Image (cartoon, rainbow, N blue to C red; front, side, top):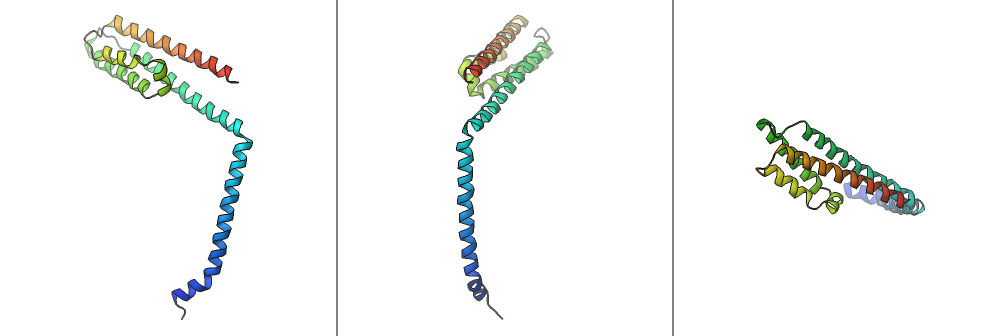
Length: 152
């Protein structure tokens, strides 16, 4: 009866050949991937940029939806105040989590949080903040469209 060692010795040449073949296939696949990347670098770059722009537009849309949710509540109603505060904190957190937005509006998250935790959370202050954020988002969107056209 053959031993395990003798079986390994018998198939050693096959495994070495298979390892060489696997290495050659890896080199070929890597070379093909590099060739595809360099041949289609512009297309790949455009596709990635489109994904990033889509992600940013999604963030802007979510922020606009949160602003609309804020309009559903009134600071005159004491039971609405906690929800208004939560939404203001959500907006501030989402802006802080997005480096591209933070470049444009570094002070806005702090202002939103100050309004949320301050005693001055009144309907006029809330409406003023909603209008301010809405205009900031519009300007960011317009500037993004302009810069997108300049890149073409």
